Image (cartoon, rainbow, N blue to C red; front, side, top):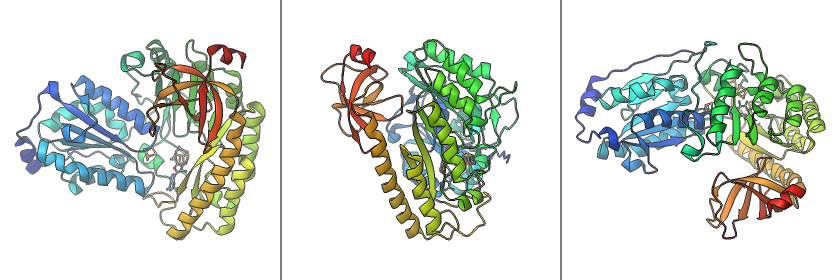
Length: 473
Ligand code: SAH
Ligand code: SF4
Ligand code: F3S
């Protein structure tokens, strides 16, 4: 899907240029609200860098912003509605301060210039492949134009936007690196291939060079990003296992993660790379989506429950301590109670350490869009609850194996609910909560802790121990 639209609405041009509050370059403030997946988080960081070069500084207060970016997700209708209601809230600042509003991300790609026509408060619509144009477009927006650029670039030579600044300068220890964009899987329920286009993989050398730059500037924890990352195949036909080994072997890199995998494409060579390369963390996110073969078939997933279980058996044979998480959808068209029971059974048989559960949401232009959305909302909600209960029970059971272990965790900052408690991450990607005990421990530090308890299965509690204890562990 390729769409390009430039809307030059002279009425709004006049309205915008009449704004008395045109900010000077030096004082411009940027407020960003990001919805959706890590792809969007990564895009937000890139847009922040482009705008920093134009003199924008970030603010957490929308009412003092000169420019607002709403980076949207369209994977479920609920996500679209949340972004649109955020726009409604931001409208008031436009009247009081002359704030310019940009809508970016997957809803921008999906709707293009229709958004400008429907929402007069929007000044700029920018699709994910048009981010590189943001610097030039923002000047035009501040001189009064209303613009929509949403053009997918599916060419093999697509120029990926890497991180410019990094690490210590921006105070970051962790960073995302995009290795692939788009998705060719076309699962029947999913809008991602429509809004992000066909798969394009980035050349291996370019990825290695970016990770080296990040590591040089202090980053120690890298997450490689791709919607269907195991299908990575660069212009020289190098596969994902080769990329894992090339990046994972870089000196001074401490942790390497990747997301998202697909059960058909995740291969034994990739699991071997995980098992053999020390930096690659013991966590695999492998979305199963359903445990019913009939539903999997209509989802166009291309595997059966049995094949999924065989795949994870292969992974566990090579990496016995791996933490396995998943995505599951309830209420797909035609899902019966028996189908749902198969998904419940899968939770137990697969022994998931955690999973995200979603109620099916009809997405425009997907293969499943014309099929009757025939599972009532109340039944979807009830299945969501039952599945979450089953998942917490399994996650708690699985998390108990960590209690008593000494692990190194990467500190992220104070916990959201208690400022005296630090939130960190172990290699398995659990949130680990512990008390600093009066010591100055900054975000980005690696700290040895002993796990003392599991906390709901998704997070663990811990206490500080000496570095010596870690060496002995
Ligand atoms: N490329 C990734 C991420 C896709 S979106 C992957 O394949 O896993 C993240 C999750 O959203 C999907 O795994 C799926 O569980 C869920 N999802 C996608 N489309 C959906 C829809 N129409 N309704 C409900 N959940 C959906
Ligand atoms: Fe969507 Fe399927 Fe692609 Fe994941 S693999 S992004 S669920 S189409
Ligand atoms: Fe959402 Fe787009 Fe990511 S639809 S899940 S933000 S790729």
